[in-house]
Image 1 (cartoon, rainbow, N blue to C red):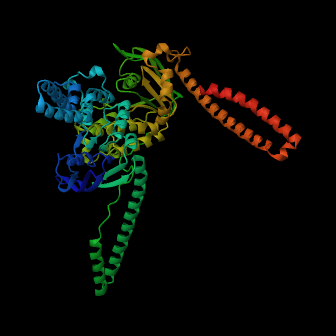
Image 2 (image 1 turned 135 degrees about the horizontal axis):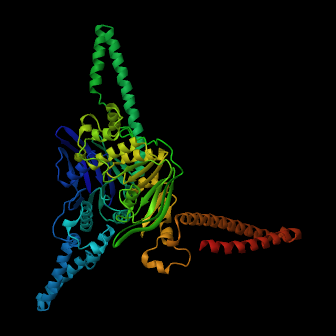
Image 3 (image 1 turned 135 degrees about the vertical axis):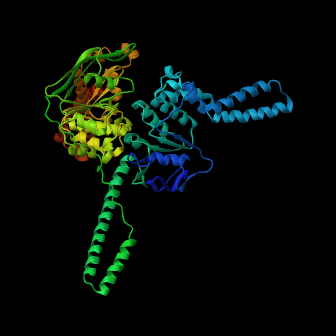
Length: 637
């Protein structure tokens, strides 16, 4: 055991955040700390680091072990560059190297015993330097920065010029390079694009120390963790396995807790009825028995009612009218910010009922496409044409559709003036805004709270074409699952940008990846995209430097959107045919072995008609096999 929390309690004013928290983490273990927003996850991490003190209980870190912590928000400033800041994590190695160089110069002027002593010290320090991978420090720093999405041309950018997200990535890179025995990471995948998240997954899977992660990225947790610590109603519960396994076990635990609660409630009600009946007899003996039962009830430890799954936020997305079949047709779409070209001459169509996810690295132009469709910015070329009876509902990750000077109530009432006060309050309650909270100014709300208001407006719009920009940002896991279910039940059409791979896997029927200035179409969810990514990127969006060496067949530039889909269908058909050919080859080869075995039987040798029959069958099989082998080679290529 490397880290444990034992009986930790924490309250702020009169609100108890943590109640008797108990868990432990083994060396080299990767664990997740999960819970809804406000459950106390970040508070618990700060208690572990010593930033907060627990009201009761203790945190125990194994003797001699180090702790590293990445907070959600970083405020690193100064004149240092990105590279200099991250390189500081290896300053002790750089100091070792400087000492080695100094010793080398000193040894030139020594002799005898002094030289011998110096050489021994030099050998020991060299050994330590090599153990710390000293010769590869700079390449290690470069690798981490690139992995976290910083190209080399940005290494010299000053910290003061960075955004909050970029500062968090710098802090994460520096922390990873310090290699503490226990890593505490609070939402490490925020501000990372998909490639960087995949890099971080690989890094953490191979990380020699223990890791405790707070994250709402379920795909990330599925890949990384082997233990889940859940915070609910201020209490903790441990589950072995990744997030999906936790989800299954939690459902069983929840049913068990609910049954125990209902059984206790039934028993309490029964006892109260008995007590009332005994008192009604108005006999001394009966009254004493009633009082005895009352004392017994006072000693009963009441079970809390378990939270119902998805009992909080309620989203019901219903189109007012049905759109035409072709919801959106995009042709020749081009956008440039010279010298940068985001995308050029791109075509795609979205049909009614599809749920299409646009994915790609940060800065490739995904949000730009949504803004062009919503006429918030102009394309340099091309056309976005909506189909008949299409009504758009837009969710903006920056919440520019919200008026920051209004209250929550005003935002809804001004957008939907025909709604009564009661109707508005009911809608806001379903998005967790109750009582006086509805009069809070929007400018004072958190990102998650603004997101819930945007979702409320989206629901009220009754639109049949939803355009969503990072809809799961700032949502906790439960809220994400509620939104997933709402989108899956929605009968309209959805186009969205997201980095949440689990969300994409659950909701997308098609994926458009924006890569190398082109859109590549994948007819499936995120798992299908992963399976086909390398193959289809090479066909439709090869990197610029390799395009001249591309085959003489049609290239991505020459293929329109329809041709891409036809090509994918053709590839799928070939795959199916390949499987059929392999199956038939196996059948014929098995039959050939059976024929050979029968030829070797004594009774077959004396049965001339049977020998002729087997010979004909074998010759026919051989001829068919030759054709199948040739066809297999063609398909396999």
